[in-house]
Length: 390
Image (tube, rainbow, N blue to C red; front, top):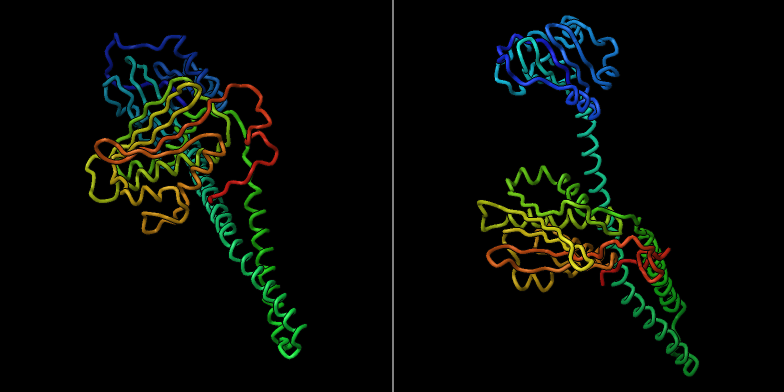
């Protein structure tokens, strides 16, 4: 953010607030593009101001400022003597957004924001959301492929064994009774069937190897900060649903050891499920999402609570079963993946019903002690065991 103090015709009281030297120094240290103008002259400028406006040093006139920021002079003349920070209307093509704070007669504070920086921040946020969505899809596809590979291996293996057994029996029968031997066409069909099953088994093996190549990238993480970042990725959903957000987070960092992408995937998935539940009938006039994070006996405990439609007993029994979903368009892999990720981090994920309405999901993760990980730690192993949804 940028700031400059400019001359104004606002009728402020003579005893109004004046910026001290310490305040100006603080603005400079905070990276504000700051400048102080009294009676039509720029009397002070911060380091950021000097870098952004080398052509407008201390001593520059208000006319020079207006030439650099078209529309500034007229906007300052229209200031109300309220003593409050007020937005200013500059030229629509201007790079800067401006606001001013009248301080005293002939003295005011102008605050500038670089529109390009706001666009860059928004773009970074959109990029982060896109990356999370892409990661979510990749992980979901990988988990689905792992589950399908595990389930398909069994019938393919059984069919291969049956065909091999049948081939051996037919070979023995042909040795005893040559007239009962298979024709060359029948024998070839049996061999081709075995070859096709063998090919399918090799394809599944390659799929399993590919999906298991994702290894956690371990680091010390502040779980509270990660939770706030995850909320930032859902701010549009929260506003659209008019959800009342209740945060109970520690003021100090709550450090855990794990993969930031995996853990953020879990947090976003649980919060999205809560938002979906609050949109389901019966409609809730005051949807509430509660997030509580605390430490207890060496563990980080997170609770995600909603006042949505809740879950039936039948749905609760299949809550973590792959490909079982209560959503019409759901694939039923989200919660199974979440539990796999949490267990990979030596934690637990479970569900409870709220006394009045809705439900809560709980995460229990070990706090990071700062000690080197032992060889028995699955997260510390060079090649961690693959996550399976069995």
